[in-house]
Amino acid sequence: MYLFPANCFQCSMLRLVFQNQYGYYIGNAVVPSLLMATICYLTFFFDLDDFTDRIMVSLTSLLVLAALFTQTSQSIPKTAYLKLIDIWYVTLIITDFLIIVMLVFIENQRMQEKRSGDSSNFVYKSAHKIMPVEPNTLSTVPNPAASIFNSQNKGLMSAQKLNGVSQVSFPVLATAGCFCWILIHLQSSTTSHNI
Image (cartoon, rainbow, N blue to C red):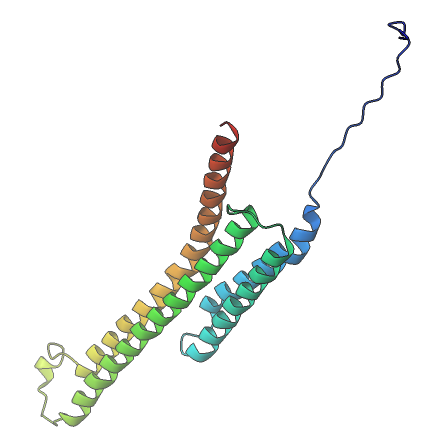
């Protein structure tokens, strides 16, 4: 048996550092999906009367997001838990879906207001009666045309207000949703590693 002196050994240490190449995911997943979600959100700035374009752009955006999600899911390793990229896509798809629901609700509101304005206008036209007006009662007699105009504007403002609230609330809700999902994911991942 051959014994080596204690100071004769040379040691080598090999250190492997693994890094995720996040640039791929930013360029091929995050930026395109964020652009699609932004395009869907911008439909709130379309003309209220242009429902066809508003809904078609939103549905197309949702379809493209689903395709991007599928493509990204196939190119990353399979896991039993949700990854941050999955949370990103799920949040954007849910946000796009809620935008579509809100667009339909705004259109339904706008059509109800339009119908109620048209029906009252029809009643006014069919019940039009010429009556002599005395000069001293002119200021006290309500003008039916003015009340119809005010009810139409009030109804239209309701759909416009709903659209305006959506313009402000959806970016806030989407941002809060992303942060909540990420925090929940980070919390669950730290507790699972402590076991």
